[in-house]
Structures are given as C-alpha cells and as structure tokens.
Length: 515
Image (cartoon, rainbow, N blue to C red):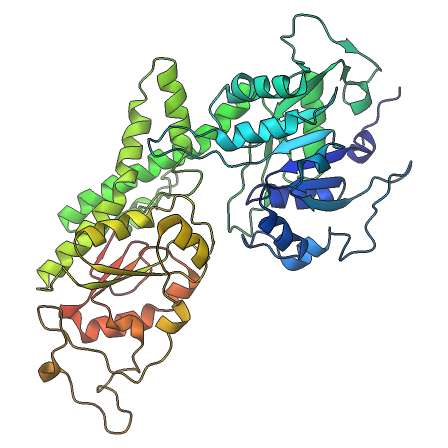
C-alpha cells in the first residue's frame, strides 16, 4: 500500500464520537465536524435540545458556528459516504446506541473532586462503560479528561475491556500484534487484532477565551502503540492549526496535563501569600507586582480566588496519586491550603473594614459582584466566591449576589442562591443615596439637602440601587462590573465613612480594600 502524506487522505471515512458536550467537548466536536462525520453524545437531553436549536449556554460557540455543522441549518454539508469525499457534519444525541457506528471515541467528561478533596471518577467511569458497550475490534478510545498519571490505563481500560469483551492492545501486550501494509502512518496499516486501542490527548480549553480556542492551542497526543500515536497525532493535526506534540507515553501525557494547572496553582498561592503580607505592611500588592514585573523573567501572576474545574481541582489529582505511592506532596498541598482559604480571608477583611468605620456587621446588607469562577464566562463550577458569601453570612450579614453571566437556575441548584438582577441593580432610581449612621441605619438628619432642579444631592449623579448597600465586594471582573467604576467611586466618596468597597480584582479606582 502506498503511503500518503496528506492528513485528509490518510484519515478518511472515519466516524468520530465525542462523549460529553460541555466546555471541552462541544468546541472539539465542532472542529472535527468541519472535516469529519461526528456524533456528539451527552447524557443531558436538555443540552442536546438547546444545541440542536443552535444555542450554546456555555457561550463557547456562537449560533452561527453551530448552524455551520448542523444539517438542519446547512444543506450544503456532505452527509453521505463517498469514495471521493468524507462526510462532514455533526449529529447530536443523548442515546448511547447512536454512537455505536463510530470507530473513534473521544471522552471529554468532567473529572471533579468530592467534598473530601478526593478525585471523583464517576463521570469518567460511566463514560467508559457507555463506550465499552459499543466498542468494536480496532476501535480507538481517546481520553481528554484531566486525570492523574496512570488513570487511563489503570482505571479506564479495565472498564472498557469488561464492557466490550475485547483485549486492550498496547506495546506491552504479551503477544506481538500483526502489522499489515507498509506505511505505519496510514490508518489502514495500523495494528489489526481482536482488540481496541487507547490514546490520551489532554484538553487545554480556557473557558470564555475567544483568542485561545481549541484550534489555536498546541495539542499533546499519545497512544497505546507507536502506530496509534502516529494516527492520533495526524487526526488532531488535521484540525489543530497550532500543531501537535507527541508525548513519550500515555502516562507522560497525563502527567504533563496535571502539572500545567498545578504549577499555576502554586504560583497563585505564592502571590496570595504576598498579598496577605503586604496588606499587613500597608503596601499595595498591585504596585509591588508592577514594579517587580519590570524584570524580564518575573512571572506575571496575580492574587485572587482560585476556583473552576481546572486550577482548583487538578492539584488534588496529582496529590492523590503521590500519596497513593507513598509520597507526601508538601508544596502542592500547601498551595492548595492557601488558595482554599482566600475566600475566608477576603470576608474577614471586609468585616474588619466595616468595624473600623463604626458600621454594624450583623444585619448589614452586602452585595457580591460575580459568582462565576472567572470573568466573562458563565461557568460556576467550583467557584470560590461562594466561600466569601458563606463566611459573610456566618458573620450575620445579609448577602445578595448578582452576576449577568451566570444562569440563575444553575446558581440556585448548585449554591441555593437567588441571584439579584444586575439590570435592576444598575437601573436609575430617583431615590437619593441613603446616609447611614454608625449602626448602618439611615439617618435623615445627616442627609444632604436635595438639589431643587434635579432632586438629587448637590454634586451627585442620579443614584442606583447598587449604591444602597453597606458593602460591595467585587469578586469577578466581568466587563459589566468594570462599567460600575464611576458609579461606585462617586458613591464611595459621598459616603466614605458608612460604605465599604472591597475589590478582589483591583479594577476600581476607589476602594477600601483589595488583594
């Protein structure tokens, strides 16, 4: 058989199944569907219905992007096999039998931790069971979910073998597999045997990032045999413009992924500790970091809450594996302790500032701006903003939360919080800013007289409901919150002694405290 070098001619007439259509799976499914026949599977029928209507609640894909690969909206898509053309379209389903005709399965399910900070492999196990039931000889299963080194072959492969009744083929297999053809890079010439193959290519999606999309991030690939590694490399190279990197083994690829975010976690823990030190010294942390950043090799990390499905979770996977083999990971866990306690640290500082101003803490009305784990993104998974909220509630504060990006139903389900409408908070109000006495109550005797023509206090803009809180905590730097800078700064200057503004992200010009 003549070896070819063109990716499209090497990988033809293959059907790709993406298991899990969240922040990772959906963009990947879209990218593959531009060149291949793809079936996207998710256990949520609600998710499938919204995607079939070209709506992505994660905001990773636009409606036009979805419509471009869905035959329902794009009649020009090739949906039939041909000797000359590869079908390219996306079929969405919540029925596992619909993925049976695929021969390449890519698992992109979440890998969270439980309440004891132990890896929770339940989604990965269930996805492996689903794939194993439809696995056929020579099929390839590629895992993208973040795991600890060894998880793919030690935890997932046995499930695939049990569910399928097939043998896992690897270079470590006792009997030597038979190779046909002449070119190892050609899919047709890979190992043929009554078994299946496995690969690992860790996801590197950054939710909400429209610059570094799936195609623009270099892909690490690995496989259970050299031939399968080559095939997986060519498969991803056909859609990834940033290029690929072949890892030496599946374990190496797993380790590479888990240390990416562990490294970031440790670096952020370092600057979080610096922030605590500088706060006691009366030094502005932002000013210090800007000065230090003038040296070419200073790493630009910033203090803050560390949440989300990656940085706040992955270190626990590596720590779990380390402890399993008898090593206590001191630095990794020390970084986690610092970052896990930042919410409590912020809340305590807000309360101290209120006390210093003579404000009553119990019963105080506090507004927290943002509940998602990062800016301009609807993802609320493992958001550490909740730590700030709960700590303030423990002090007896009445805490409201607003977030224009978060889904109110998801927030209610996950954290039992009813979001306050952002649009209502920033809508104009004819009610002048209330002046509070030292007990946090309105004191009409000290309120400034209203301007006869505008019915507002002298030299004051029209006030909004957001200015009527005793304290405002900026937790997430959404673009919408940045627009509140002038409103809050003006309100703060007007009632400096009876309002606290705490700016975790350092985006407001005027605040009482920040990291």
